[in-house]
Image: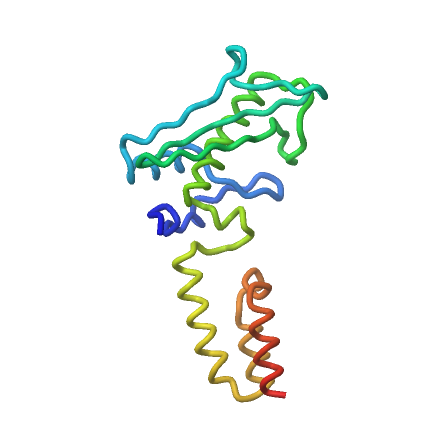
Length: 172
C-alpha cells in the first residue's frame, strides 16, 4: 500500500462552498517527506501552460513523479462551483494548475478517499470495517442492530447499509 494512502488528511481539508479540497502546498510537503526527489511537471501547449478548447474553455495537465512512478491528470479551468470558465485569466489558469497538482498527488494516494466520497483513509476504513463486522456478529436483535446503526456517524452509515440489511435479514 502506498505510504500516501495511509495518511489521514481530515485535519487539512479546506472548504470552499460545498467543495472539499487540500492545500497544494500541504499536499506537496507530504509528498516531499516521502520522496525528497519527487517532481511535478506542468505540460505546455505552444509555450502556454494551458490548452484552449473550441468552446473558449481551457484545460491544464500536470504530471507528478514520486519514487519513479508517474501519474498524469487533466483538469478544466473552473470556477469555485466546478464549472468550466470561458476565456479564463491567468489567475484562474494558475489556480487550475495547482488544483490539478493536488488531484494528481491524490492519484498517488494522498487524500484519494476524499474523491471517492469516503471520510477515512484506507487503513482506518479497514479497521472500522473489522470493528463493525465484529459488532454486527454479536447483535442478537433488530433493536440492537438499529441502535448500532444509529451510533455510526451519519457520513459513515451509507457505506454499511448493505451489511446491516444482510444482518437484519438473518435476524428476522
